[in-house]
Image 1 (cartoon, one colour):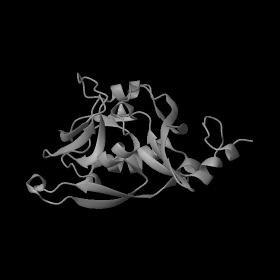
Image 2 (tube, one colour):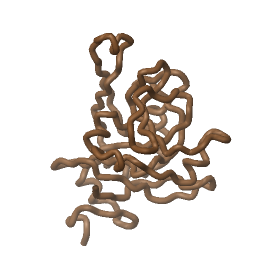
Image 3 (tube, helix red, strand yellow):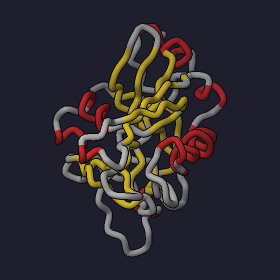
Image 4 (cartoon, one colour):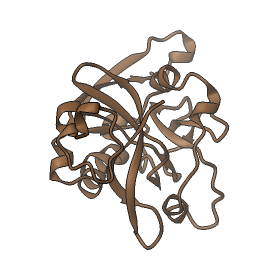
Length: 209
């Protein structure tokens, strides 16, 4: 899977910054779907809800992270995406139907369905964590390299994870725990090509003089 640099974020407790590396998971004529190569932070999903549309992590990604990681020209590259998330009603294990909630987000977490689509091999989902992610863990908590998905888990107040071996944890982790956050976003090719190339890993010949 191709990789490019886009935006910058912290890499250690001193808040030194480096370009964020992204997998190019999908593309069409106008856009690229980018998924962070590794978590950018360790964070709770929320204080009590496992539902993406109401979650603290959604708010953090689309406000604080968006403003911290990208300059004004980079923000202009990021497209607002229509995101459909599968939610499980209480009776799903009794034959109830899945339901979907749609949101509009600049930045989002992947769903389990998207991970299966873009990272079909379990080993391709395994990530390493940088020092800043380790710094943002709860005290005395062991690093697991797991990362949040935006689907609720089967347990109350839990959201799904990709575990450190690349497998899914459908039961879910309690949303108040700190787990890895791997953002995803869709950018416009034309605007990306107009960015200064210093620090960028361009995929497009037309971006290079």
